[in-house]
Length: 207
Ligand code: ZN
Image (cartoon, rainbow, N blue to C red; front, side, top):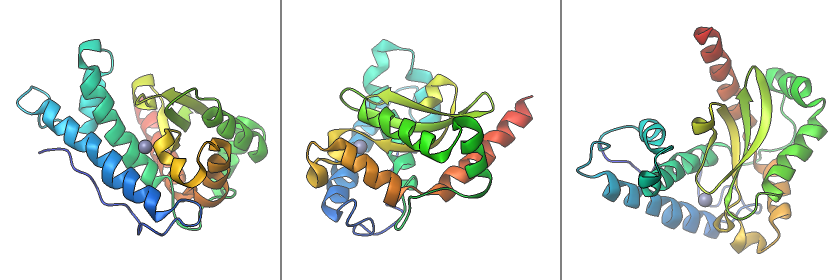
């Protein structure tokens, strides 16, 4: 089974005005697709062919000679996760268990929001900002280029992309404005809440 480009979980124009159809056409149709095409070429006829994204990520993360495969395969996974981290009319404050977990881990929603925005705003160059579950707590992290929390032993709950291709058409160099729009209008808290339930269950099962 070759890697595939999954369709977006919403129409191209569904995130406007915060993320334009033109941005999604390029970001999903060109950038994400290129990672899929490159990864398929790279693993073809190698022992990695037929393995899942997660398996290839773990198998290549610590091997410098496989950096090209890792970068492309991790970027497929990261983008799959990013599309699900957004929804039309999303954003604002979470509710329920997730809201309680954020209050317990960060002190208050506003402190979480500041940390989550700062992570993406201060990532030098390309990368990702993450809300993760680690050691029974929620944390904010950032990663460079294609790196993701799967290789750092934590469970991702939510992400946003700070590669310039994620925001340049809509926001040019104003990355902080893109981050504000993501947090206030695009975050899919239901997706993060489902990921938290799964991460807690895996932790309980592992104990
Ligand atoms: Zn991207």
